[in-house]
Structures are given as structure tokens and as C-alpha cells.
Length: 277
Image (cartoon, rainbow, N blue to C red; front, side, top):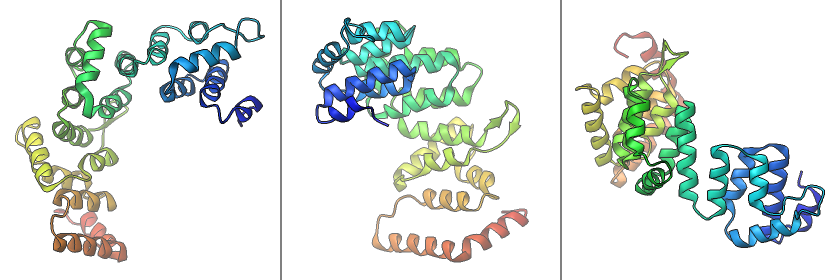
């Protein structure tokens, strides 16, 4: 629950954020601390309010937000927090990308890149400015022996979203659990295919063709999901592309209604117990 100070100062946004940030630091909750900093709009006022609320005379006083950061964080976390405090959120995101990449947190790293599909150049520029290294080169080095991850990360870092989606589908189809058990990441596959126009479906398929050495995306998706019921249905709908006419929209609505009435279960049984799927 919010403490009394936070409730009392709820209408004073910067003071409320200062209280939340202090509380997160004291609790060792780095995620909450960074989330608070990322949401701060008036950073100068935030810093002033923090210094006044937690001055050195207090029992938990620091004198400044910077001093609080130095006292409670370490390593690149300090640089990341101060980047937010200095009004440089893209530098903070570049630092987060570096942390995930170095720590081998592959999904978290890819997530940062996806979050910046529209401003990938700014992210790459911030990364180079902070670490004097090209982000794409760092990706190539880190994933030299993991081509699926390399292709996906490179595409998103270079701002090629459709190529990134193709690489996501490819990696999802080649998913390995515990490092060696073959499987499929159905969720990632369907998220990559969702909400594409017909034109974009064709472009993603073309990228997939090149990335996989000629393998057809639709055939691979169907093969991977043939026993997955709803996942297969959703993928098939996505591969049609977003409807462009009223008739296409009605046809897709009818197909979805049929699936929900039970046609999907019948299709699942057919796919499950026939060799073709």
C-alpha cells in the first residue's frame, strides 16, 4: 500500500514520484525505481523535491537523488538511473540493452529492441555514444554461434521490422528447451504474424524464405502448429492478412464464428490424427 506521505502528496506528482523512488530504493526494488524514473516528466522539479524531502538532516537523508542512486545502486545501474535523471531516456535504454546482452538475457534483450522498432537509429546512436561500440557488431559477436538470435536481433536493431518478424517466426519454429529439446514457441510465432496486411505477410514470407534458405513460411508454420488447435487457427487467419474489403472481413468473421462453434475442435482432431495435418 502507498504510505501516508505518498497519499498526502498524491496531487503533487513530482513529490509523489520522489517518495515512490525513495521507497523503491530502500526496499531494493530496482525495477520499481527505474519505472518511477522513466515516468518522471519534470526531472528538475523531481530532483528538487527529492532533495528537500530527503535532505541530509533526515534519518534516511541523502542530500540529492544522485547521492541516493550512488548509495543504493552499482555498476551500469548507476549510469542507467542517472541517464533517466538527466533526461536521456534513450541512453538509459541503451544501457539496459547492454546489460541484457552481456548477461545473456536473450528474450529481454530482444524485447528492448522491439520496443524501439520506430526509433532504432536513436537507440543505436545512444549505444555507440555510451559504449563506443556499434550495437549490430555487438550482436554479431554475442550471437556468432546462434544464427537465429543473431538474425532476429540484427533485424530489429537495424529497424527492419518485417525482417525481424520473419526471424522471430524462424526462431520460434526452431525453439529449443533446456538447450536441446526441440519445440515450438507458439506464442512468439503468432505474435509475430498478428495484424499484418496482405502486403506485409508477403514481405515477411519473402524474408523468411531468404533467412531459411528457401523454406516456405506458411508450410513451416502449419507443420509446427498442426497439433496446436487454436494456435494453428490464429496463424492461418494471420497468414491471410488483414481484410481489405467488406467481403473479406465478413469471411474472416464467419470463419472465426465457425471455429468457436466447434469447427475448431473438429479441425484439431483432423490435424491431430492425420498424417497431412
